[in-house]
Length: 623
Image (cartoon, rainbow, N blue to C red; front, side):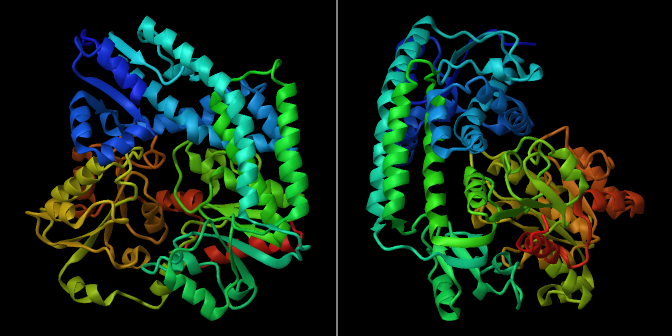
């Protein structure tokens, strides 16, 4: 039954929409819902408690917990349909044309699409998918959109709103008025930003010397926080004593290295390193490419195309971002001659631009899956561009064919960050000392969490993580021969929050310290949330695993193998656990082998070596 009272939905809560609401809507509708919040209001919420407490009573934020399953719908809609459609219908945009003229290659549009996905489309798709969910409960929606672009026109048929929500007439006129001002302003802002970018690169430092390029066979993308000392294998996985010796690899930090311990290690052993965006800028490059190319020629072309092109502003920031990344990439390759650049966990527009610039410099780019990405259209598997990209198994090539259409893929298996280590430890009969005595009296049930619990834009919010942990404990309380180990992925929950969860439950340990690739060896049964990568890695390692899909994604790719493998509610979850523990019933060998073949390839300690072979093939010209 649908509700008849009006529901006020604000796409982005900012100064303008909040004032409009107070003037025109507040009297009859004391509560409004919103989906996104401007940076200004984020600041007010964080720093002015008096204002934020009043706003919180008036404006309620909607998130993925309110519409379970919507996270996956939004990713699929954005990555597989809406973003390409929106981009395609605006291919005569003045900012887009100007950027592609500067870059000199139509393939840079892939990077602009990526920026558009992250900065604009996904947020707007989230709004309209939420509106569709609200429309199922209420016929009377008053909507204050972010801008005048009707995203409903770019949605696939299944997600389109059947009826447009009510937009107040006054708001429509104001939106058009401010939209026109934004367009006029952007025509001045774009040249101004090009000038400021020129100044930005000028102040980074110009060298009048001829730069002699430093030569490396391999370079690897490295995090600015340095080595994660709790799990250093995540940083050391690629090394060997020969061609992948760390002393022979250029470590390219994304920004200035912040960890002193990592700095000391690199200095002590003379490991080559540099910072991606802190390179010397040759004067000749600054004069021809930045001053003449990016500023003067761009400005002339921009003015020439003012009349015959679209001026829609949602492409402005994505285009400026790609221009900046392009210049930074070209500066980097003017300082270094690298045969193969290894990207890790790099799915942003940076890797696309870096690959294109590498190709101009007769260099190569390679990347690899590090997570079990089984949601279609998710940003980690769309708009990828490498010479070669390593995947877990055959499933991913077929599942993500559109994301890989510009990239050659090869199968290496799951768990590049540690599953080889698990294999070698298991061959040695390793068992963590801390659990040896426990194992004499109990079987061990591992409950694995996930990241992003503090991120409002994550499907795994704190609320869902707490639900998962609590229900996993509740479902296993009766099995007194099992000790439960909760393994948080990071610090998504505080110690106090974890203590609240385990209070009243016996035989529970929270282990934040032991590396997950060692804990896998301990487990008799592993419970994982959603489709967390540890689940697949444990299956590949021969462990029994049960998935609990608390975000209710009906297209969960593991559900097709067996009802026993994936649960979507507590009753189903409890039934599966009981079936495994009490009845000793699990997947048959043929099903397990099929999962390993399609998703994880092999458990043989050779995952990293297969990736090294891919890298060597690019060096040796076997592409």
